[in-house]
Image (cartoon, rainbow, N blue to C red; front, top):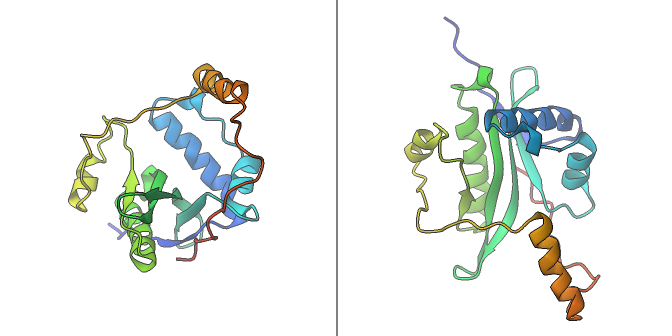
Length: 185
């Protein structure tokens, strides 16, 4: 039996984007929602490599520098703690690379970014039946059961937005400050 190669973690590069998009679709399939995933290579490239991106990413790569896992994340802000944190949107490791430490190293990289920048939190959601709950508990992550997620989307989102427009309180066209690149790790 050969020992698995321990992956290397690095920021996503433009040439990694097709592999990351493929893995996002694999994750959607795993989570039994492939029809809800519409991400394209162009969309992810634009999000990650815009002049002032709001989305950041890291990949776990094998010995041939091929992505075998990824983490896509963005900054959030705690008004109570008065500092930013990282919200992990997606974490995925291809089945063949599971057990190599890729998932742990991706999370460790994000934790390192938090510590170096003075961020106080690394947060994410997980679908309730995902067996990764045991892994997350093993690294000290706590389930936040007292908080209930809400989502506004589709027609309800458009209807509420229409109320702002009708009241003349539409958000200005001037964008707010966008976080720095922040993906050196």
